[in-house]
Length: 156
Image 1: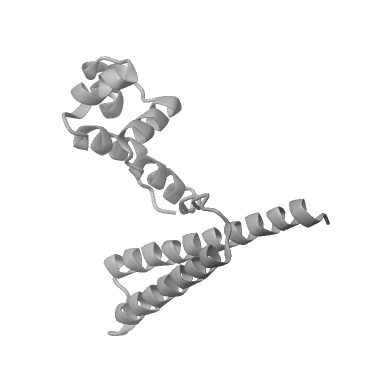
Image 2: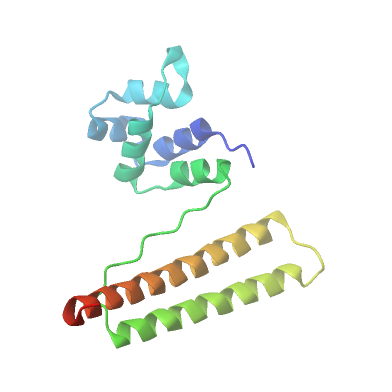
């Protein structure tokens, strides 16, 4: 497992936010200097888990969550949308999964074309593999909703 520093990532997320810590902190009901100290560990200040979650939710920046998952040898998959279950939705979900698989095959093909895989190529392959898994997860959730609706209508 790679050792991505959560504090370094949090520092970047906070300071990449428009206006930085001074702009984000009031939305967290904190002072700007307090938040800046927490993400830089100055004066013994520490960033708590709930604050890290609040930063993620307020900024929409998933880097803290991604670093935590990466450090635990995991990856994030977005939850599927709750679009209505229908035959058309299933066909769209299958088409999306097939397209994501094609994109993964293309990414792997270009990555191994020279007989080696660079760190950047591996990142692109990982991102495409995650997109495929997300598409498959969405398809499975959609089929599960269709099954539940059918059971509710027809019993069993």
